[in-house]
Length: 636
Image: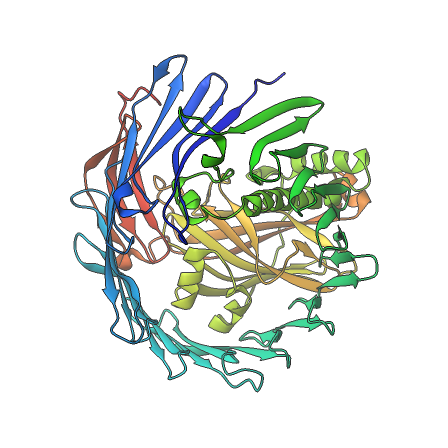
């Protein structure tokens, strides 16, 4: 039986004045378990009648011994806006603000400076028009004044962005916006981006949007003409999404039974059952079922996840309306997290109101008069999403029971990432196409921050190298690297009548395989990792490079496809799998002239440990900080 864990929130409330809200301060948060207690104290300047903390102190206690206290401090201006924040590591952030003249009366940050040490700083400056709409955003290396990023915006007389210009080392990236929808002047109908290739040749890529008469997005067409479309019912509820690869997801609303059935593009079905008040009672994805019950006021009383764990809320008498205890039931073992109020001499319980489930002072202050139901629901929703993702994998690999589990195990054994020696024979012939920036359009919706920035600046190198065999075609559309991180953009076309997936993906540079740890394959413009029969899909392979290895520009990209039938997954034979090797050039030093390196040679003290900052490298893709841990540190 696990030891009970406990969280205690100590709050103080004081009467303000008539017709004014009372002040609630979180004084301490303590979390105890496994013979260790983590504590956080909050201090305030109560003379200004604001519950914004001026000092936060954190430490741990274990078997009567307390750790070093980590102290962070904050200051504010007369309007309660933060002016400085100093962390326990010594990092200090200062804020300056710009105020408007009448009649707009706004106050917004104009300069933010993050100081890590005397030589390592980062400065952000922001500019606005008279209405308080941002027109300029610039990021500097505060030590040398080097501009790391800069964007400017022009605003029309309706407050809409007309153009945005991102400054680059060689060419500016200009985006132009149009608003021609008859259903609302605020609706963007097109976004044209001017990018430049490696030879500074400009190319305009236009993304178009259309809307329904209710001003809901109807279609979204990328620069290559591929369309993403949406359909709605008479009530404006989304009923169908058709993706660029031809797959679709649907939502079916059964208003009589208060039920919604959602079918994703990969065939996963989710059923949501609601009560007549619109509160979710049951959420089922595959075999995973999540259940919820509510009290008479509509607050969640208990939630049960897919593994049978129940999270129940016990409340005080209704007049208090505050959660006092949160229990977890798992395998018939009760683990309680008690939310208790500290009672001081001379004070009565009603004067000690708590806002549980808020993990730091800022959230407590921001939501001081808000019931904690929102936080609880959000946490449960996140858990549900994680469970759904697990269930999707379970649905795919184990939908036929233990036979599929065995097949998945065989698949992992035979095709684990990094095992190059046992791949099937690669395709013998490689075809070179015409490299073009337009071939990168399917990947422009990526949320990978470094890659997205490189795409906007035209820094991704078009490749257009492909291999075709057995009815499959794998094409490397583009790639980019700064010597520490590499991205490969590739598409798979399936001209067979069998569905396939990527079983193995890897990258070699100069005959040296990039580390598989930290590598990932992201979806581009689709929500499924499968390549359907007679269909296609696009992917982004992200892989970190070892900075101690001298890679060369001779790249080789490995992809292995496998069928998804039960027979294929059960078999250890390569006859169900097809391997591709695609060679191209990818220079790890392609941004060497754009790279900026700082050598702060500074030592930080983090939790009592000495950490040396040896260098900071700025590249067009990312910022990298090289650290060296002192050998004399007690914690290694």
